[in-house]
Amino acid sequence: MDLKPLPCPEHPNPYTVLDRRFLYDSPWIRIREDRFQHRRGAAGRYAVCGFVRTACGVLALDEQDRVVLVGQWRYPLEAYSWELPEGGGDASESPFEAISRELAEEAGLTAKVWEPLAFFHPSNSSTEEEAFLFLATGLHPSEGHHAEDDEELLVHREPFQDCLRRVLSGELTDSLTVMALLALQARRSGVDAPLEPALAQRFFQRTGDHPSRGRARWAALDAP
Image (cartoon, rainbow, N blue to C red; front, side, top):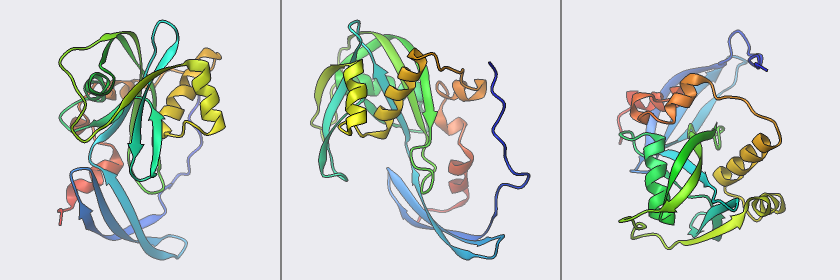
């Protein structure tokens, strides 16, 4: 059944941007501050965090319906985290190219079958970051790939249903991992809808050729 778009106001954007300025820039993140006027009268400043690389993740399933998980220490959380193979793609590669590389580097695997699974914004109140999630099956070992020299990774395979339980218990908390697992469970439960064609194409197109509206705003700014 085709879904009608959710309702949207005739003039949805209530902000008038008075100026924008860079606060911080690095190879991974950038921060700017926008000074705005809201149409209801409020005036203020909005700090926006931009991610230079595109977030990608893959739910890799083996023939026993086990999920490939990668364990690593997450510096901001001060905690060890089990999650899907993930990584960031630069503007010169597609999400598919990026996550294919990450699956090989982090888990030593390649896959015969790839398909888009889900697309979402991890934290849209503070960043324009996009996340592209894939489902991969037909797994087999890769050759000639290794983890980065600043990574210490463990690889584990966990039954899919047990992964869902660990999401609900709060043991698996990584947003890409949670979203991918619940998206596949929705499919298996009969809740499914095809991605909008233009969005589905972006999974296999270079991100630099198709920037989001939020990411395109950075082009007019000069880095500090």
